[in-house]
Image 1 (cartoon, rainbow, N blue to C red):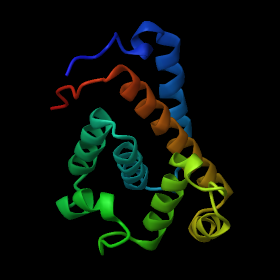
Image 2 (image 1 turned 90 degrees about the horizontal axis):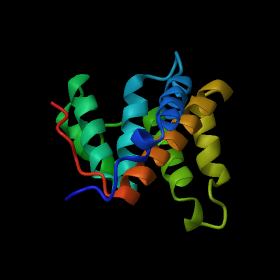
Image 3 (image 1 turned 45 degrees about the vertical axis):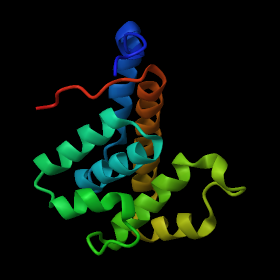
Length: 151
């Protein structure tokens, strides 16, 4: 596959700077980096962004995550490999990514479950992180960004 055009963040360098700043701002001192990566992998799977699926699966592997956790993200509800807090983050990520799929995009039960594990600052961190990966996925999908060598 070949990209339709030069990636938009390469055409508009200020956009690259802004998205990298958004990603840095989304990081919380109290949410494990693994949780962000799991969320990014799941959102990228939903959006069909092969570049981001490969990148975030590799990041998880490089961080020492077990293969079963990486492979299991797509079926996290049925998989025994995730902690309750991670499940809450993954459920929130799915809802925020699939806004148009339900009349109540983020139902109270999903929100309340996430709020059991994350305080307001951590929820803000997760929401900005989810929004950020959705932007990357949408840009990559629109230009048909091929998977690049991430070794």
